[in-house]
Length: 275
Image (cartoon, rainbow, N blue to C red; front, side):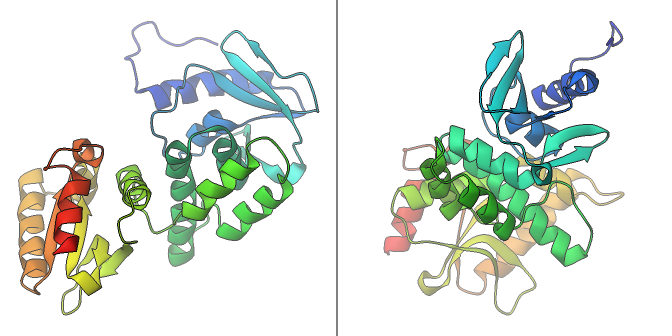
């Protein structure tokens, strides 16, 4: 397979998808792309996942190996665990996120887990099928079948923390850090009384709401004919209306999620929630 020599470089996920599409026609009949490669092709969100190697699962009990930039995994691959996306065989979203949860640290596994569950929430609301969506029941069926396999216990811990109301990797990782640090469990996508707004996180009994600010979030909010300045102004008015109800609003960005300084997400939340 070839590409134009002057083709511009893409982000790692797009490059990974291009390589998988090139390799797809050469897959064995008992094989499908899985793990991070399936997640990329299903357009599930990822966080700090290496994408140098393509991941393929073959339906066999042995024979896993590395072959160049392809990692071949051996494992059961029932027909129900495989679907075709744009002509390429990939593991289903539920199988994909469970496999990743078995082999990744919990915070990295939570990002695609939340992503697939959230896609199912949106698909149910819009009544529009989504090949990247996985319902809690579908995920539970896969993890039950994986009982006793390596990493199954780790996957159960990640699945127990997953929530389809999380709308972005930043929200997922924020919530994970809150839970891991012992903060009170927040409500997600909480509707603020007397307004038409909702917040990413809320502790209504303590009068506190939290908002994760990511650049993509504001880019998504752009409507035809709008610029970023318009969106930021609307966001300011929205926050003013939320504060007018008596709520304390705490905002943070990517760099604040892991920060331990007084300006970090956790120290600020801990302070306002303890007042």
